[in-house]
Amino acid sequence: SQQGEEDPQALSIQEGENATMNCSYKTSINNLQWYRQNSGRGLVHLILIRSNEREKHSGRLRVTLDTSKKSSSLLITASRAADTASYFCATVQTPGSGGSNYKLTFGKGTLLTVNP
Amino acid sequence: NAGVTQTPKFRVLKTGQSMTLLCAQDMNHEYMYWYRQDPGMGLRLIHYSVGEGTTAKGEVPDGYNVSRLKKQNFLLGLESAAPSQTSVYFCASSYSRSRGNTEAFFGQGTRLTVV
Image (cartoon, rainbow over all chains, first blue to last red; front, side, top):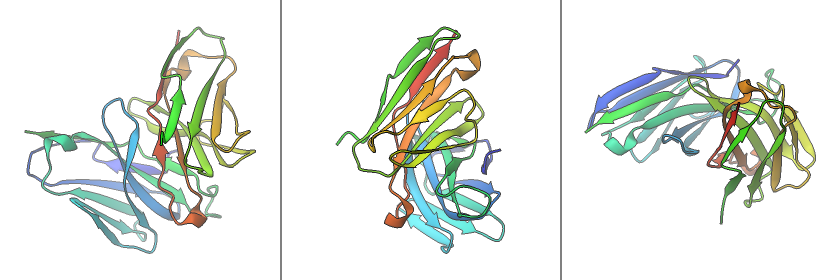
């Protein structure tokens, strides 16, 4: 089964609003990453947060990580129509946690639609 | 700097045919991955490699084989294609964890249809 699960599966907002997506995972991790995919294209890395970090910022992106709850959230502030895409969380599992070293596994994604 | 290149971009196969998908990266990355993406399923890991000459199974390895004879190339083979293998296949690569950066870089995908 897949390591990460994003919530919600789909999100529709107006331009200028904030978008929040959540990710839950099952086993201990070394780090958690968020990726973006425009329709029909390859994935693009957005941000990486390590297991000993709680919050990270990059431009309009804010990621939080709660290892006790095995969850993460991605906040996109002041959204734009160009932010319309699918967003995926991915985890790198901690060696010895039941997963193999450095295996990068993805969730099913959240489809974000930003309406002009 | 091309990054990660997948060949071919599109392919239609008949059931039972075989084919090889090629992934090439020019970033000297140790790690390489093959994923398949199906509607509503996200990306599922097929096989991966942590270095030249090594491969490991992912979440959905059945029906696929892989080889990593050269560090820059990761090949995905379908020996006898089935309609259930119709999907979009993505290759990715990354540095090893010891480099302190496991960000993955993706190719543009191969759209495979098995009829």
